[in-house]
Length: 137
Image 1 (cartoon, rainbow, N blue to C red):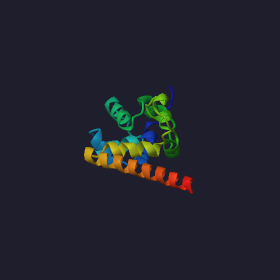
Image 2: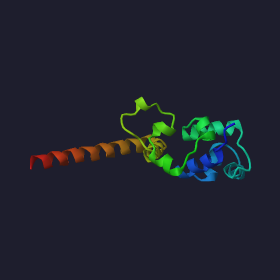
Image 3: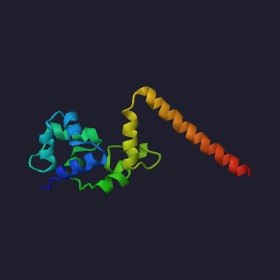
Image 4: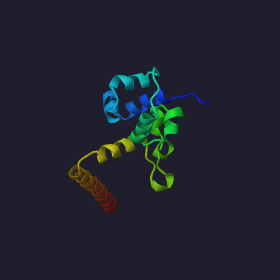
C-alpha cells in the first residue's frame, strides 16, 4: 500500500495558495482545529473533505493523497503537471503563480474583472506601440 502524503500536501497547497487554516476549514465546513489535526497527521480527513480539498485546489484526490508535492514544485511546475487541466488546452506554459493569479482574478466581481482585462489590453497595446516606435528609429 502506498504511503499517504495528504497531510504534507494539504499544508504545502494551503501555504502555496496563501490560505489560512481558518479559511480552508470554513470552505470545507469543518472546525479549524480539525483541519489542524489533518495537517499534523493526528487525524485522516474523511472522503467528503478529501473531495472538497481536491476541488478547491483543482487537483485529483489521488494526487492530494499520494503525490510528493513541495512548495517549489507547486510554484514552478506547469499547471498541467499538478492541476486537472489537459495540456492541449493551454497555448503557453502556466506555473503555480500564474494559476493563483487567475484564481484571484476569477474571485473578483465582474466589473473588476472587466477593469483587469482592459488594463492588460492597455499594457499590451502600449508595449506593441513602443516596440513599433523603436523599430522606426
